[in-house]
Amino acid sequence: MARRKKVYEGKTKILYDGPEPGTLIQYFKDEGISSEAPVTSEAKGTEGKGVLNNRLSEFFMTGLNSVGVPTHFIKRLNMREQLVRMAEILPLEVVVRNFAAGELSTKLGIPEGTALPRPIVEYYYKDDRLSSPMVAEEHIVAFGWASQQDLDDVVLLALRVNDFLSGVMMGVGVRLADFRIEFGRVWEGDYMRLIVADEISPDNCRLWDMRPVIDRGDGQPVAEPGPMADVYTELARRLGVLPTNVTHSPKPTLIN
Image (cartoon, rainbow, N blue to C red; front, side, top):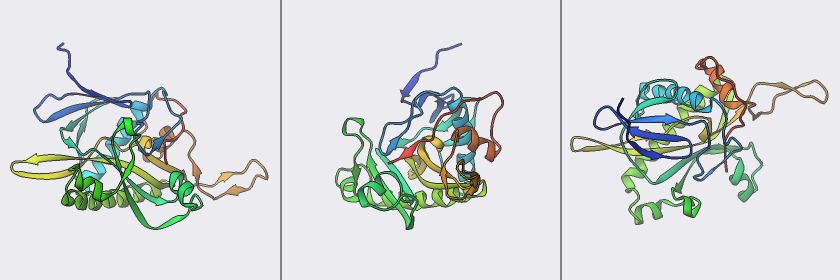
């Protein structure tokens, strides 16, 4: 068997040359989470996480494709790999916030869990050496990281992704507080368009469980949303995409 050519390796995934021009094979690793802003997590290396993230990202990307939001996803190949379109990735992390949490609560003094008056879209410049700082649209356009038309399209797509994910999550008793996505450019003849790239999984979402739990103090149900226990397995189970023989107990990724 010919050895596949590795194109890129990050903390959570490896990209290999695909079988056809313009395609890549995306391999999901168990270890690590993306260190790019605005993410922190205690899940550093958990057995089966890559398998579940592959299934979950397939579920979300397929759903987005079906409602007219273009993504790089083509098909899942096996338990850990999927075939995706090659894209020119924008050097930006795009964060959509629905509720105050993490850095937003800390810096602005807004109590965690407060519903925002509207979804807030933020940009972070992808550079580990700089700890991926937050940037404004003016920085992005001035330094040529994306055009103003690109940013207009990014906001439109990000809000559509937010509507889709929020609805799906609420349907299984999960609140989508915030999430992070990436976008890439693809060319179709002389026409360029933006697509959702990378992955959508608990590694880049802040998820709160909306189902009441029993308070250990007085035995009464507690309705306040809180972090999901074993978020990868539990979310896959609720969405009906849990593969067999995969067990682990990581904690969710948090967006600062």
